[in-house]
Length: 247
Length: 247
DNA sequence: CAATCCTATTGATCCTAATCAAGGTCCCTT
DNA sequence: AAGGGACCTTGATTAGGATCAATAGGATTG
Image (tube, rainbow over all chains, first blue to last red; front, side, top):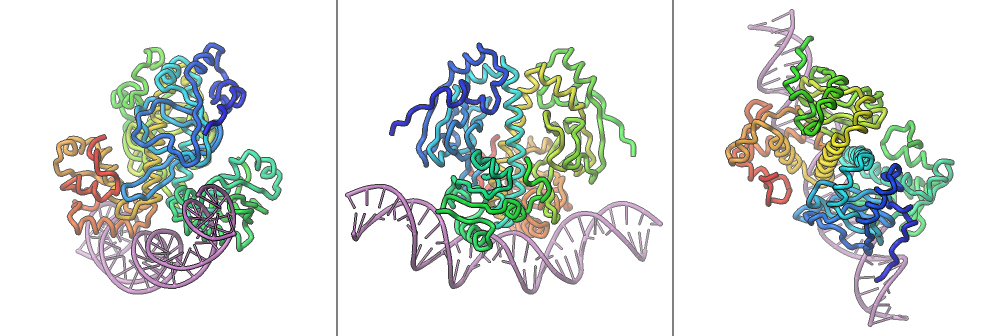
């Protein structure tokens, strides 16, 4: 199936610029980035990188959603990363992948050949500084996620996941900041949600039904959620109540 | 209580050099590091940084063990980081702490005042490159930890924790690589282990007793563990069996 | 349009780990 | 040496989520 490759303008010349990696790049540095970049698209369900694969590139998600996950020998599976547009995938300095990267929806990524990208890192300090910031942000997110996995109830996990998705939903930002009812797209299947949360898909389904019964959320089809009162949802997450709407 | 501040030689002039952060530092750069560094010691049980505190420094653990953890309003607690000597604590570019940092044993850290350290990062690219590598390593570790929290059984969690501690135990390295019986110090209380693993302390105690009953481990006192056959322990972790002894 | 497949929902039962509770061990203090 | 306190172990019971199973909705295909 052929899909058009995104125009350069889709990501403002440099695809990782939307996370401001290249905000301070000199023209000649941008040129070097351009020279080593190419686009790839994957269909929903395809595996982009297998754990253990040799890493040929690092990449930035341009559109679509991908997941990072690990699978145990007996099939138990845990999602360990959710990559949305603008997220950075891959590890400068590592030869092989530690996790599977799977396209959940159709995905386009902007790749940079790894070796030249690493060379470029050495000569453009502000890029590695920005990557460090991004890595530390991801580390903070991973640590929040660990609290969720280790200590939250099934109900709290579901409520937390919905707020996480709502906060990263560009289209919902406006309604969120005004305290309006919120409609958000649910990009994950029940199974993917279960893998995210360390639950089974049956438990996910039951908890969603329960939140629905109690009016905390409403479903529109299976893949759209309406949140009439965001604070009420936040109260179900188990997180500190203050400041929840901010950040 | 007064403890002697470690000599400079304890950490080879630059305390983060043992993780090779400064391997490529010029003499004048090392001087700048020296100028903004100071040592602090904490007793077991003391909180080094409270979540939300303004961050005055970043630091490197010189000796002892500290934990990063989060607590929910009702007291549920999850450890999200275990800091051993040479680990880096803190976040350049962030004003306030997201997690509690607590000394588990007596701890000495080598601090760098944050602002000047951040300035130094900008002018010494190889330091931020090294910090990036360390952050990515920690991210990988966090993701392994997420699999443990989300999908492993209590027994697998305990076995995994013991292997993690064994692998980071300098004194045990030799015996480990030769396939010898291994004695390791257990630096954590049952409660701290429970907070690490997302379990209760009773479950931790029961699972340790069970592994002991079945001869996978032996206890020497409460805080030393003997592992007669490391592979047998690995078989209990749920991780892929191949390559387990390496890395 | 029926057949099939994939995803989701709901019910019944089981099991793991949490909770509640009682002792036990070791160390420190006096 | 006795007392107290921190830490650990073990037992009994409960509960939350997993597992097994049946059904339903919606989209795609022939």
